[in-house]
Amino acid sequence: MSSPPVPSEDARYLEQFVAQTQAALGRLREANRMIGEVVGTGEAAQGLVRAAADGRGVLTKVEVDPRGMRLAAGELGAEVTKAIRAAQDDARRRTGEIVDDALTRAGELPQPLDETFVRHRIEVAAHDFYSEQP
Image (cartoon, rainbow, N blue to C red; front, side, top):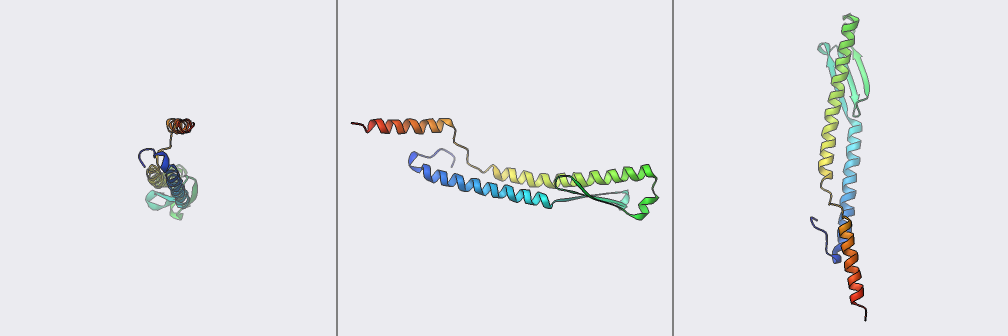
């Protein structure tokens, strides 16, 4: 609903609002679940070093092919760092896509009713009450 309901439709509006909010919360829960399943991957040194990170960017795995051990210590450290950063960047990108989609879909929520709506409803109720008095 783009505009506030007339008083006779308040109950229906509230039902719609609650249903849309529950649906949005369901989509956010689904996004959270999907983020929990994200695995970002990265590699360096022509695939001799591989890393993985979860949807929150936490490093979950680093693998160094035995041939990678032939690299000088400083070079190996730099390649491991590259692989880790690539995995975290991949996880961040994948998670960002999920979050962007969830935020776009959450934007479909109806606008909350503000204090002017409540004030108007009270004024209408008071007017109706006092106009019905003998």
